[in-house]
Image (cartoon, rainbow, N blue to C red; front, side, top):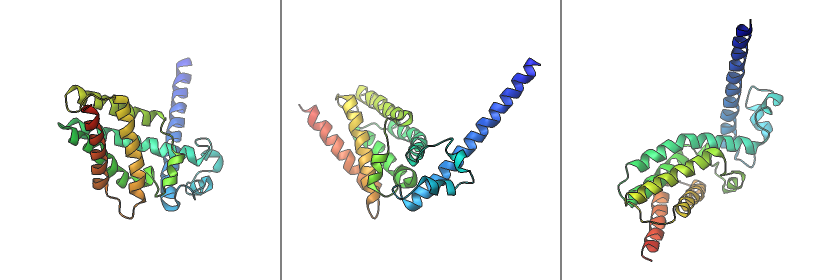
Amino acid sequence: MEEENSRANDRELGRREQTRSHNQALILAAARAVFAEYGYSRTTVRDIIRATPLAAGTFYNYYKSKDEIFQAIRDETALKVRPLLREARSGSKTADKFIYATFRTFFDFVVAEHAALVTGHSSNAMHVRVDTPEIIAGFGELEEDLASAIAAGILPRVDIKYLTASIAGLAFELSENMMDREKPDPEAAARFATDLVLGGISGMAKK
């Protein structure tokens, strides 16, 4: 009897988890569409709720504000882009290719997923935290790859934590600026960022 009750509880927990995952997916899909249509600043929670088949009470079981939803979308996006970035860097044998691959992969992804990352308004940046687990993990992977590149002699010995923060900050800021332009150009943005970083590294290495 006890074993049957345990199995029944497991099945119920499984159903609840499936329902939770399903509802969250509905909310995030709706939010992506609404943010893309109206932009962050004009979107309201009510707009997002109306774009789902869920009741308001159900909605608020998962997210309390549009800030939380926007960050969830960004975290979901981070999960997608992180393996792409690591793969791009892994085959780089020169400093230029390493840095350029990082920026170009990120900017290409931003253009492809602009509704998730930025919505065409630079002011959205103030609404996005960069201290969530998924984004912090991405920074950690960049730091690991930079350490490996330095150990392999691909990059000169500089402060890895400062370099990680510089590359990450530049990537986020330039992506916002790039998407504000009439015609986003990931190649130009990546080339500018790469030259800026390499120029700085080169100057420090000569000291």
